[in-house]
Length: 556
Image (cartoon, rainbow, N blue to C red; front, side):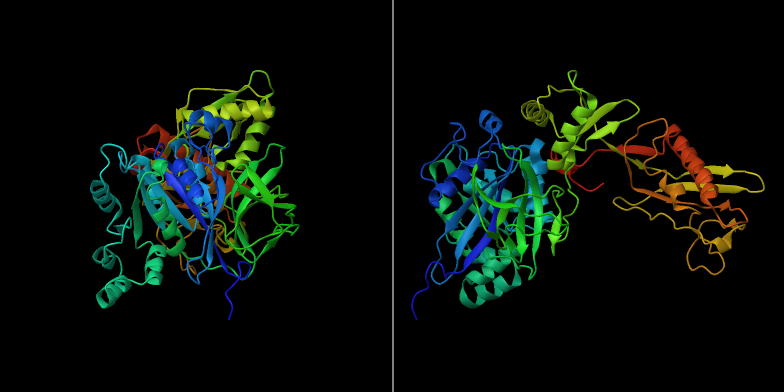
C-alpha cells in the first residue's frame, strides 16, 4: 500500500495559549516557536517593536501584550501519526488585562505557562495557575531566560514542585521515570513493568492534568524551543468533538474598516461560510488570522479558531449549537471610575463605552440617572490609559476619568430583621423580613408565592409547617424579598454576598393576596431591614476578586 499523500494525511487541530506574568518573555517565546516551526522567515523582537504578534501601535510602544493575538503553525507528522496544526493564542501578561487572558482560556486545548528563570513564580503566575485549574486546561511549563545570571534550573524545579505539585517533571531531557510514576497509577504500572511509560499513557496523564512537563531554555536565543515543539506534537491529542455543530465565542473585536468580528473556536461539526448560526445570524465571512493578516476560508472544522464577520448579537463566552455557555469569569475589576467628556453629550460617551463593553464585558458600563454620570469598572491605571487612547482614536472623544474608587462587596455578620405593614380599608398585611449570614459562596433561595388557601391566616414562626405543606411557609410575594437584592434607597451601596433571607412571621389579608398586599409591606420590610443594617454594625466589607494578589483570587 502506497504512502499517504499530504492531502490524505489526517490533521490534528489544537489550540494552545501562551500565558505569563508580564516581562517573562512570552511574546518572545511565541516569536521563537513560529520561527522554529517555519511560520516566520525572520525573527522580530519586542524591544525592536517588530514582533510578529505585537500588531497594535500601543503594544509596540509599551512593549506589552494588550489584546489576545492569533498565529498558526504546522508541525510535521511523526511516523504514521497526523500532522499537528496549532492555533497559537498570545494572551496579555499584564494584570490590568487579565480579563482578556481569562476569556481566551475558555477555548484552549493546552497552555504553555511561561515563567522567568530569574524571578520564578510571581503573584500573577499563581493567579494564572488557579485559572488554568478552574478551566481544566492541560499545561506545559516553559522556564525562560535561563541564560541570565542567577537562573538555576534545579532551584526553579524545586519551586515549581513546591508551588504547583509533584506533577511538574523536567522534560528538557528524558523525563525521570520515577518522578512520572508518582503522578498516576497507570504511569506507575507501566514504569514498573517496562521501565518507562508509553507515549499514549503519558499524553493521557498530561490531558488529565496529572503531569505538567517543564522545559528550560532561553527564547531569545532559541534554546529549548525545539524540545517544546516536539512535545506539543507528540504529547498532545485532539479533544473529543461534537457530532453536530458546536462553537464557543471568546472574543469580539472590530477591524480597521469597522467590521464587527466574532472570534470563536469550532468544537463540533463544520461551519461553512454563509451558514446561518444558531440565533438566526449569518456567517458572511470566515477569517483565519495569522498575526495582523488573514485569509478567507470556506469552512471551519473542529479545533480551528476563526473570526466570523456578520453576527451582531454574539458575546464573549457564548456557546453556539451543541456548546454550552462558559462559566461566569472569576477575575473582576477592582476600581470604579466616573467618565466625562466636556466636548460631547454624555449619551454619546455612553454609546461609545457600551460599544467597547460589547468587546470587554468586564467594563460594566453604567449610567447613573440620579447623577447623570457614566461609570466604568477597570483593573488599573494602565487599562485606563489604553481605554482613553481607544476612545480618542476610534470615536474622537477626549475622555477624562475621576480618581478611581475601590470596588468592594458587603456581607452580613449578624441577623437583622425588618417589619412592614399595610392597612387599607378592611385589609391588613404585615411582613417580617429576616436577613441572615449564609456560608461563604452560598445564597439561601428566596421564597415562592404563598398559596391563596392560606389567606387570612397568621404566618407561623420560622421552621413551623402550615397544614398541608411539607416545607416552611414562604413569603406572600417573592418580590417582597427580591426588592432588597438591589435596593438603592437613598444610598448607592455595593453589592451584597453571603446573604440569606426569609420571612419568619406575619399576617395576610383574608382575601387572596394581590399585588398591593405583599408588595407594600414587603418593600417596607426590606427598607426597614436595610435601615437597621446600615445603621448598625452587622456587616463588613470584602475585597473584590482580581488578579493582583493570589489570596484575593477566591470566591466570596
